[in-house]
Image (cartoon, rainbow, N blue to C red; front, side, top):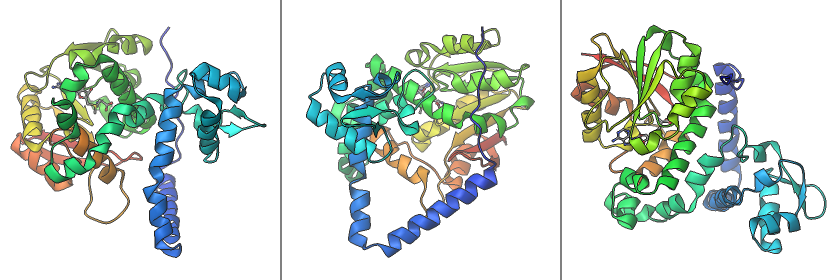
Length: 366
Ligand SMILES: C[S@@+](CC[C@H](N)C(=O)[O-])C[C@H]1O[C@@H](n2cnc3c(N)ncnc32)[C@H](O)[C@@H]1O
């Protein structure tokens, strides 16, 4: 029986934008009013809570609380931890609304802690990937990357980022599921804010577990789709197709986009792909698509667009992840996208913003 997709209900875009505007204003006000040492200290110590969330995810605390509140001694026994330090971890998290101390040394889930559960749509794998040991070590090398431009995987493991994942299948699984967690959060707007229904055949290039393409095909019964990704990344993609009842119209094809691309489709989606690669590599990937795409085909790149201002931006922060974790990858300005599109034979046709930090950047043949 195919799974129904329960798209999360989002307020209209103007409400989201207005709320974000008010929040940014209050934050600027707070930062201006409070002593600057205090404001800076808050930013500087933000990693305390990040790492604590990561450890709680690694210890599966949220899963242990699904049936109801539990005592610290129960949690310590199940996680193989000492009671006192585990209590201090959970007390710190509860102070930020992640878990709740219900009575003396007993903890329960909160709405935010629900997002760490493994038995439902959640951000558990996103947290495990970004705040786990591997990525933590990469960020420990941020200074090296800033000084040399070299990514931390090269320094620590002497290999390319995706080679590292290919030789560590457990990490690759967590990485791919982390990407799916993030996609699940964004999918309601990504599926509805671009006219995918105009396509007959689409390829999700680097589509991993196939969640995005499954949602697009589920909404558009006349489209056929392919996920094209490295063999290690598409373990389980067929299961996603089955889950959504689209297995007769969808296929998972292993391969590298530097060598080949499935041909003849009229829509090629690249979500969070180009930010992993240098300009030169992006032009190679896009040129490969250009030579395999149907004549009237379109390229749909989904990425952040960096603006030249001093405003808070998800893109400017995730760009640091690209610095430590990719070879030459980065978040780009619109001019930079225009340039790589041009070099690969595409004209940047239009940009469609939406409620997520990612925009649709559409390309057509020049
Ligand atoms: C940042 S993830 C994005 C995944 C997915 N598009 C999403 O947004 O959830 C990058 C993807 O590119 C894939 N990838 C990396 N190198 C590749 C290559 N040479 N050929 C095809 N896919 C590749 C990875 O396996 C991974 O699934």
